[in-house]
Image (cartoon, rainbow, N blue to C red; front, side, top):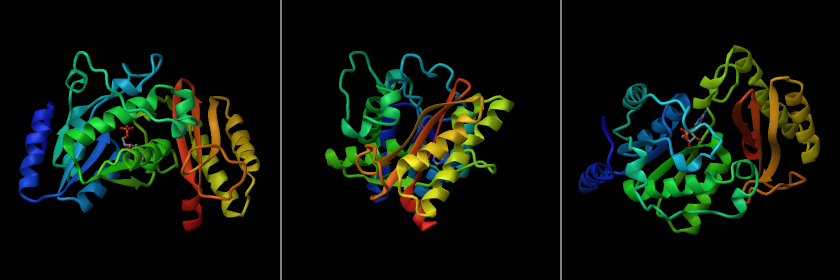
Length: 285
Ligand code: AMP
């Protein structure tokens, strides 16, 4: 397993693999890796001959008041995890390697980014689409792996790949959770003991919503209002949004008459956490 920090080194390595006829998977991350990321690396390792993990806290996807500076970083720990899970190369660039002076080209999206995290984080998806496009152009993978934890991001990337004819297969992977249900996230490290307990309201609300869908409830307001009441009962929690959207358009829907995503963002103290479920996964379960 190698760690490289320049675009040239990634390209040289991938060219070598291509010359040997090998397939390449890409797992884009912001580092501080946990078992959620590991599940994506495992999936790539299963499907491809070689796996590249990008480990880059992308400044472009953070708003001015967000946690860019404090975002946790630990490349030594990350390298160990990637190696253990069969990754072959970590791309760990400096922001200056990704965004040279005078950088002025962006990939942006309408419609799918109007709701959910796109509403609360106006510059976020432009940063995500731009960096993921750059990573796709640098690595030129056969497949790229994204977690359903960031469900809107997964939908946005799929849509971008389709709209812009990018020849890459996008694989969505299930949410990995702690034993008590909390979705694993690098940001969970921000939580103190009381907040860590309070954060369970997200997965409890997900469970409640899934149970209601499973029992046949079709009215989105009924489902969402019960989920919101559960979250609001926790004094350390403040809801950013809890919404039901069409899976394809990410626009809100009143009735469960098509595949939907139920997504939430909730502040626990100062930490903003997200969680969700797809109604299609409920039916399958
Ligand atoms: P991040 O480093 O937070 O930008 O995440 C990198 C990738 O890992 C994204 O595709 C996330 O959706 C995915 N990911 C993060 N946490 C989890 C999780 N708990 N389960 C599954 N995938 C995850």
